[in-house]
Image 1 (cartoon, rainbow, N blue to C red):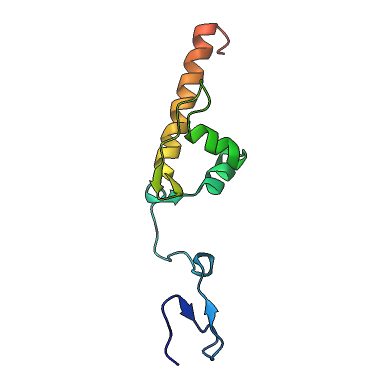
Image 2: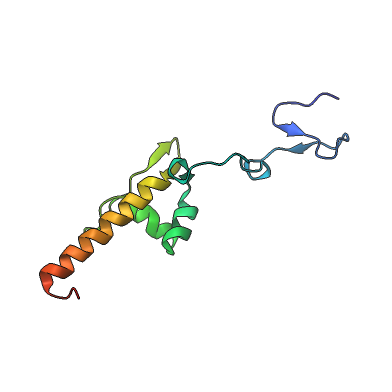
Length: 106
């Protein structure tokens, strides 16, 4: 029986199973971290916060934080790894400058 689009037989037999995105292994070639795209759960893991907090940062709901740059593909939201790093550096520099101005920087 020929394979249909989106279906495969993992053991080579006739038992067909629906192909899901998590069933596909990541590419084996070396991908530069700067080119990686992260999902909201991956960004939350990187920032050590909740997914809801990341979504609030992305939507600009915090007055003291700039919105996190993102790519929107339909309903899917992706964040470039280098964009996340640049955003984190911006926050770090801004916090350091605020501490210097307030006299709390040591």
